[in-house]
Image 1 (cartoon, helix red, strand yellow):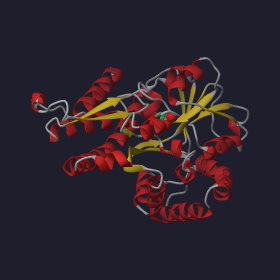
Image 2 (image 1 turned 180 degrees about the vertical axis):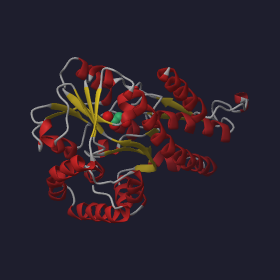
Image 3 (image 1 turned 135 degrees about the horizontal axis):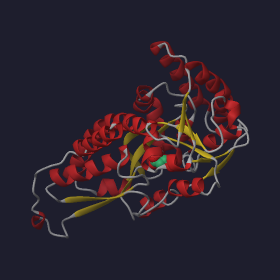
Image 4 (image 1 turned 45 degrees about the vertical axis):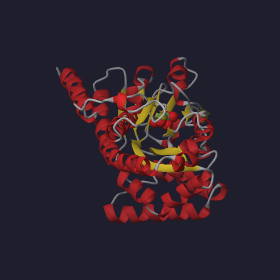
Length: 350
Ligand code: LMR
C-alpha cells in the first residue's frame, strides 16, 4: 500500500512538474531555414532534476518563440558522454550542456572548490557562494576560454553507497575502491586520504562496473542513485551529505553571441525561470526518491549523526590545504571563511 502511495506521488510530481501545456503549435509558420535548433546534451536520466529542467526549458522556449527555436534534449549520454561533452560544445556539435561542476576541474581547476567536502552547510550556502565572488571567479575563468555559464542548477548532496560493509566512520573507507567523477583531483584525494582507491569513470559506465564488482562503491546524490538503479547493485548506503553535486549550464560563447538579440532575451528569461523551478524540484525529487529508497529491502541505509559528521569533517580538513597548495590559496581561504560564517548564522556543527 505504502509503495502504491509512493508510486502515485512520484507520478503526480512528474506530471505536475513537467507542466503540461494545452497550447497547439503551428510549426508550419516557421520555415526550416528560419528555425534555430539547439541541441542540449546531458548524461543523466529524464526523471532527475537536470533531466526535467532540460525538458521544461525546451518546452518553454518552443512556446515563447512560437516554434522559431527548437531545443532538442539528449539525456542519458545518448549523444555525448562525460569526457566528450566539452569538446562537442567547443566544436559546435551541441549548443548546450550541463555538466556537474566537478567535471570542469581538468580544464578549469578552480571549479574543484565546489568539491571540497563539508564546504557547504546546505544548498543556501551553495547559492550564496555561486551568486557571490566565488561564482564570479569561476564564471570568468570560463569566459576567457570561450564558454558562457547560463545558470547554476542544483542536484544535491552526495551520499556513499558500497557493496562491502556499512560505512559509518572515516576509517571504514580503508581498502575499498570507489568511482569518482572525472577530472577532479580533489575528489580522488578525498578518498585516497582515507585509504580508499578511486577509479574516475563516466557516469554511464558506473552501473556496469558496480554490477561486475569492478568497483565496490560510489558517491552520488539520491536522485542519481535512484534513477540509475544503483541501489540494485549496492548493499549499503550512508547518508553523509558530505559534498555538493550541482551543474553549470554551459553554451559556446561565440554561438550564444551570434543568436538574434530577441531570441537571446527569451532564452535568458526562460533559463532564469527554469532555474528557480529547478532548485525547488531538485530538493523535492531527492526527498521523494529517498522515501522510495527506504522502501527497498535490498539496501541497508545508515544516517550519520551530527557527531559522526563532525568526525568526517575533521578527517577531510587536510584536503583544504591540498586544494590551497595545488589550486588556489585565495579560494581556499574564501571558502573556509564562508563556511565559518554560515556555521555562525545557522548554529550548525559542520
Ligand atoms: C556523475 O557523474 O555522477 C554525475 O555528475 C552525473 C550528473 O550529471 O548528475
